[in-house]
Image (tube, rainbow, N blue to C red; front, side, top):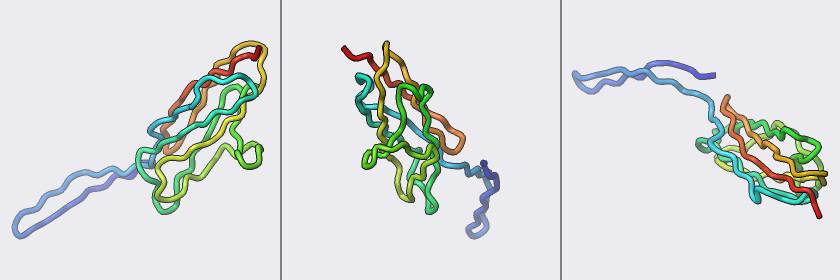
Length: 130
């Protein structure tokens, strides 16, 4: 949550004060590439933060709204990933993989990432194969 305070400064006989609010780092954007795939294919999801993560990193929650059509995976193992993922310190962007599944008809999938109370979305189109 946001923390509010005041900053004061003085130099010689002059001085001043101003309010300051520090809030958690949020998600700046989410993009999907390619944004349209035939079911069974994969797509990359880039999550950008508003700035680089601090020393403890930033936890990002990843979601897809249609689990029967797509899910986030670890590309090295092909296994599903924990939806709560840590973005390491000094990192401002991470890329994740989505595995799609065969669908009977085209399906739009909403892909979202949330951090610091800010959620951003992207759309992935999963197409029915021939």
